[in-house]
Image 1 (cartoon, rainbow, N blue to C red):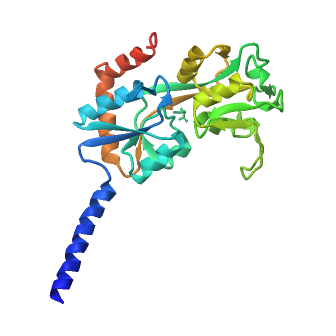
Image 2 (cartoon, protein in one colour; image 1 turned 135 degrees about the vertical axis):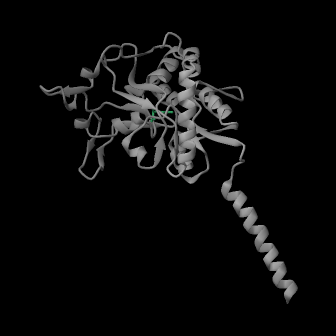
Image 3 (cartoon, rainbow, N blue to C red; image 1 turned 90 degrees about the vertical axis):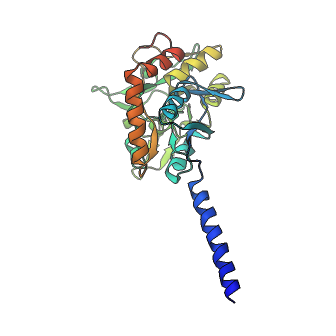
Length: 278
Ligand code: GLN
């Protein structure tokens, strides 16, 4: 009997040890970054290797922290949940700081600015924000010039979140008070590249997306352009997200970011991918 009890105890101990390892899920000397590598020049793939501003900044942070960097390439919409669950140490994906996201995760200090811009096909009837919205005398949108408009976005990004809102909040939809969308004019794609392909084939009238990937998509595709001038949809801050309870890592990341800004490393990385920026 004693033997059986000690056997059971031994098995239990082994299980507990294994579970402790499994719940950590990660190696001590490694930092796992979750990203969506379809967002040039912040993150993209060249063959099997990850490139981009976020990748290089994350690498520099990991070096400062004396850790190896591992990259998990996942859907944009699953980054925050994965960080909350502790599957990834942090998320870095040209991610905009929003009030809503701050309810789920903490954000580092911001390291870049993003602008939501509008991409259209050459010759499009959409030439400015005025060709999308009807404005009142205060400059607030009250309706749409073309109620049939279809706008492509990358699912779960701020472009999607803004456009999926009510017209009076600069969204494109008819939304009931409880948030139900009655007329959905937004078409959501897994990647910006798919949204751009839909624009080229005439499935959507424009694409609303962050400016730097927009420039990359326009450079790689004939027959489309970004609306210039005062037609920005939103201006936002990019930052790294970390689980709420992981304040130690957040502090380390913020310290590393400050040092890397101070010594010019971040400036150099951004300049490498976005020349002429300052
Ligand atoms: N900046 C946008 C957001 O945070 C888009 C980011 C992305 O697609 N990687 O939602």
